[in-house]
Length: 169
Picture 1 (cartoon, rainbow, N blue to C red):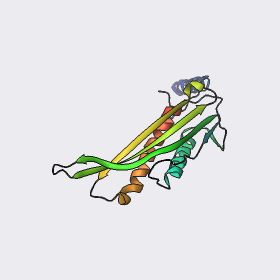
Picture 2: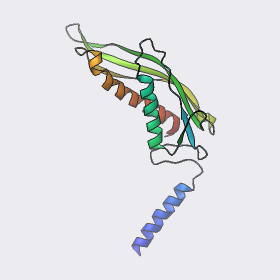
Picture 3: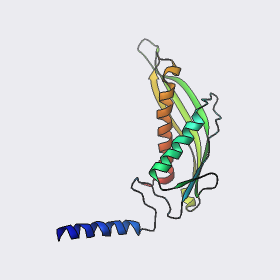
Picture 4: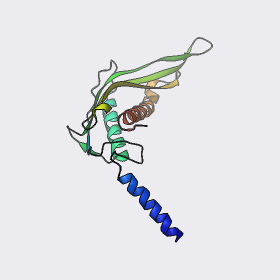
């Protein structure tokens, strides 16, 4: 009898979640029920310094994130949700000085400008720049650490975009 009540309670909770008029996801994404597709565009690179793989990395990471964490299908151009953008800055500069007045750490920074459009909820639309960075030991050549740093920064930027566009906490 206790098992019956436990299963009944679980069934009622599931029915209540499915019966909501707003979208719900166990990942925290809040997407209008009507939205079925998302279109993600390649980000052209307008930074002074161009990393030739950066645009593709951002595109791939965003697609993977939305595919794995939502039920949205990828659309080639006009999706119910749309993400477009551009890479506006990519560079490295000194971020800290040692006690002997030498550069101790450098900072690799990436800035992207993003436009998000939600066909079913225009109040969720935004246009915003996102910047992320990683510091690295100044004794290292950027080329030795660049791939790993870029991968980490791109993941953080894509999480920022995902959270701003479909996570409404």
